[in-house]
Length: 307
Image 1 (cartoon, rainbow, N blue to C red):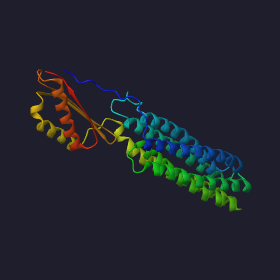
Image 2: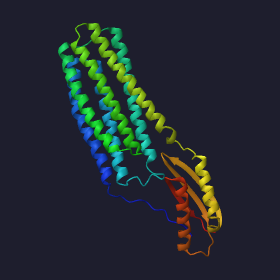
Image 3: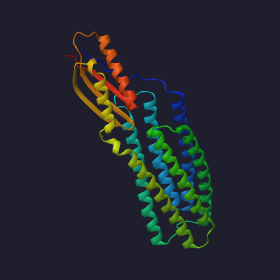
Image 4: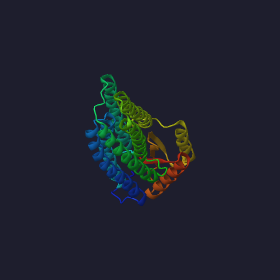
């Protein structure tokens, strides 16, 4: 006897899932307009802070588009080839976003130090004024995009949505730093003040980006590799096997792992050969129900090995 494995077919996304996709798509559309404005301002002002904001924006937008595409596949059930679900895929995208943030932060730090050493503002007052206006528009638009993603996330445990929300916080705080830096540079007449305002603004963005990226890596990296489940989960499996001891004839194998917040358990049991298949399936479902009550969010697979 055996239990056939089921592969989930494509399915229509729920209203909540569509709402999350629309929120991210709206934020990405806003990003496209902002990148255009930042490009003009960076060229006109010759500002390191604006150039860094542009580089960070382009890199994160590319990564977030990829994240949205992954989310759409997950919502439509197109990840059935992933044996243990989509959690590791979500974590991988999250780590890619964090890696992009760290790369951008390194570029910002090096350029800021070089500018301080050279003591050259590299721009004009009119250019910095244009940059300040673009930074103000950028800040306002990032507030709108952050609020849309925040409301769509709604306390979800989705790694992709949480990663998107963290990225939006980074953009919002970074754009606030850019706004302050560009405003000071536009109002100053002393070259040294302009250089320090531009460089310190860039370093502020760098520091915040590194902090956010480090948090994303700490959250996603441990579960990207195979991690043993907690002892209480193992104890729950043992209690279930003892409680249903008379329902099966032989215990062959127990495999457990965690992917994100979900515990995956694969248990191979032997049953008496004279039992009808309907009776075997009923016993299997009863054992699954018992384990889910004790463990909580779990993907339980009980395989019938026969006897």
